[in-house]
Length: 262
Length: 159
Image (cartoon, rainbow over all chains, first blue to last red; front, side, top):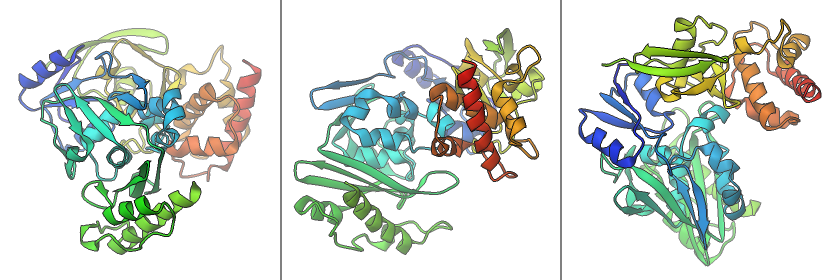
């Protein structure tokens, strides 16, 4: 790992001032992706700005039918949180399926969303749910956030502070994990509000996406009798782990599995 | 790049050191303090040979900077033995042949203790799920699971 200057600010303002005054800075949350990338010398920031000493970014609260998850909550904190377990229990299950216990102790929901790995679990879930991403200076609608592979609409010096989610009538997420990394070869999230259903997919493309035909079909009839092979193979990844056809089939299989399990 | 000054407690001993910001905890333990019980396996946060305890929970020392642990406390495998007696979990690994080459064992033991701190009577399934971040290439895990079952029992009985 190349060297860098290390900062641990106590406020968001301080963090942004350090960012603006540095050459090639990076914000550090749990570091589960960033430090690994730095060790491989894929990235060499001049300055690391640790956000974990900033207060108020690690809280989980609920108000009426919304929950708010602070961006620095770790996966482990989300999976063990009583509010999450009571209001959207399968979100706790999702958090408990990320990486392994030691990774869940460090990795954060905000870090995962900002990193926007196409195979990560949070982005697909956030895209399926009615969710807003709150930053230090604005509110971003979930659909406007994920714009490409490891690419979001966040400004470079913008910090996610919390994620606000409207509690759905139904939510679940299942993934077919790569056995080594636990990242999704394909993951499917389904969120239902009244009759409005959104199906999203992780792992299969260059970014998490909404499966339109499946969403439409499930909105009309919430049953496992879904139209098959509705996703164009051109949009799907093909690599040593799985072909595009295999991934397309997994999307249908996992969608049916979620409906049949519930 | 400037060195930074940090305070860290390792195995109940306080250290105040000036370090380069890119110092990983694992290198600090092994190179700076000579605590070589914590192993480097994959160095990519997958194998768990480098696990240490932080707030009673295991974390991977290859994937955290010492700078992130300023004013915090870490326990390593060297600190489990008390009054010349093995920790019950260490003893259980010995009794059940929970290792062959032993390279993954410090991480396995720290991971097992982290599990028992959270759930003092885990089922076999819970033990296997918990070990998803610890790789052993010798044993096939059977004896590791047996060891952890016995270690959990002994830890419960010894409070």
